[in-house]
Image 1 (cartoon, rainbow, N blue to C red):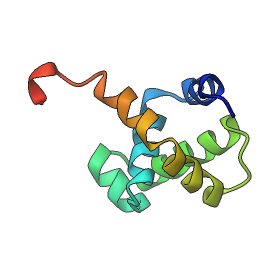
Image 2 (spheres, rainbow, N blue to C red):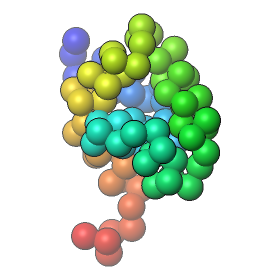
Image 3 (cartoon, one colour):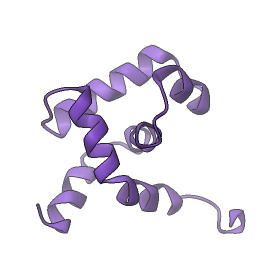
Length: 87
């Protein structure tokens, strides 16, 4: 898969889904993700379901693999929205 198509797939996700994907790439559990993002565990589960569907994956295991392979892309996306003085 080319870099362009990886970014294209990633662009299908909402900002919140990308945040959840980042935490998945960091091995956070649903409860930890929910606490970090101030959302319900059910909401995290729904975001995961939506990402699996949008990315045309088969299950959560594939989502975990995808998050690991695309960790840098997700991180770059998230840091683009952080205030400059944070670094």
